[in-house]
Length: 262
Image (cartoon, rainbow, N blue to C red; front, side, top):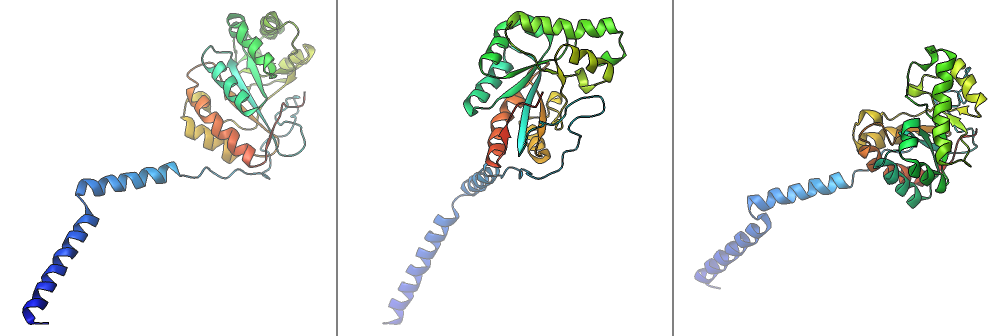
């Protein structure tokens, strides 16, 4: 091969290399788009936190005032509870999700909402969920009130619930703000209610966002957990958005959804 031919071949090969390299590199905009897509893929593929299956509960099953804070069921069980409803937007959304995943839950109703939306109370019962008395006015200072006020708060809420579902039972009472006390618990028991607390509070009432609610529940999980959610009392869209991922993660980890022992 002559030197002139060799030179032509070298020039041709160099040109091909430049073209191929340019094709691989692309434009700066294309490179940025590729990096963004990779970032999106990584974000979308982020693994959920691991679900503990042998952690110790942070609270006793039943405390000295008689408040139950764990399911009281054998095995890896968890109870989902929803406070401050019913609400015309969020309660139906929660019910739809629970129905889709075949999960039973406990709904802690406040009297005025039960009175205003009795159809939602009936929907809760028709889907096989359990009711809980959450008082009339959600008075967090109820233990310091006189006996007549305590009777009115619990009795009034129970009347509103039973007006919607006369044949239903209301096996639980939940204290507003979690302020359980023996004097109020005694009134609750006289109405047939077991005082029901919780062992996991993701703070959904503070509206921290769906991912924070989801992660807090999952990382705090333990056998016998009772989880505090809200379907009323404010914007609960974060709770609704977090619920499917929570249910899927717990079920994949072997947890059974139950109603607490009354």
